[in-house]
Length: 489
Image 1 (cartoon, one colour):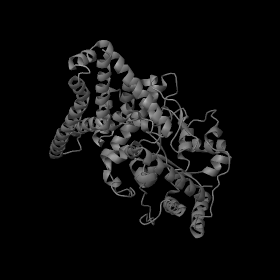
Image 2 (cartoon, one colour):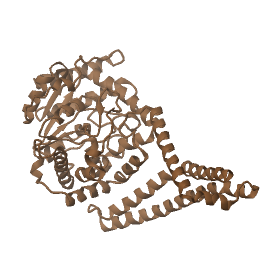
Image 3 (tube, helix red, strand yellow):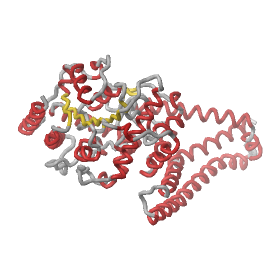
Image 4 (tube, helix red, strand yellow):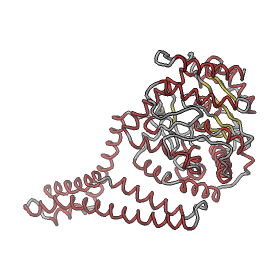
């Protein structure tokens, strides 16, 4: 009996090891994602009948290849499991019948299953502790990653999710999304802190981490995923800047929608700007509906006893590249642009670029996650916006002058819209947060509450090292900074 149990455990270990070494989980995820992409392509009204047929045919071929890949992996795993049994039977250590008899016992199946599950959980925790990753997406479990792959297997999935929500939840008029607020700037400009401060206004509705990964169906997904029962411990976000997040923290997720309607903008090594000629009525309608969905989701989660949320608010750094488009397609929008001192901003951009390069090198899923939600600000994924005069080719992204040039071109272009945007200076947010944010709320038409804004912003003055920056370029950047400050005084 002891010999039979020992051989059976070797067989189970061989089976699990073969499945793990051949990455059958990743293959299965790819097969399911391919299947979902093919099915949803048939329901995408943006595709012609010929395009749908081609997509279905392509998905069918990929499924066939995926099925063959799964088959040989399973066959190899069964062979790895059968080999110890065959060797034991041949050598006389234990008969094959005796080993199989042990493996088919109910108590054996239960004990081995529990031990395997516990081992997987312990291994996952040890791996997580070893990498010490505090990154959005970096702490996804294999199941979470699988769901993420499904949701982002193609633009059609997010569009289908939105249509399902529209049919299965009560609808509200698009008037509910009147006067949306868009907070945008270059990354590291203070947009997250401003979003957090506005998020707590009673009428404001924002994206939150709870919306991931089916972010276009926030009401439906929240119900499927467990609603208020679903939660994670608060943790520091990937930037290492002291900000902690949980599922109810606001974040920037709307860029996935822009990616789905303008995929060609994101194909190169840099991203062209949007202008008033980039008209897309379908995108405008979808985005209006999406803003209403976010408002419905936050009202549903807040409950009837709380103030009704009526104003969509987003933080999307990429919106800095499409201000003229936003002003034309959503003329009642309000655009808030935090501005940080150029030398401090450039230093922070470089620091995060190095940080995310390391994170992405350690975990490929971090890159996949950031690319799916449209965050191309840093690391190996970095794709700069092509502001007038900015030529990123042949420049060193690991030198602070690259980021200073980026700042100059970005904010020089923004000077054209100083009459249409609210420029918010980080120095003011640090030195006088209460007065600065109350003034902003008045300008946006948001209710004044007893909210204390000091807790959202660092109190110490912004400072940076300037020795490594080009002196002339730094002076040019400071001239732009003070010109903006004077124009908005």
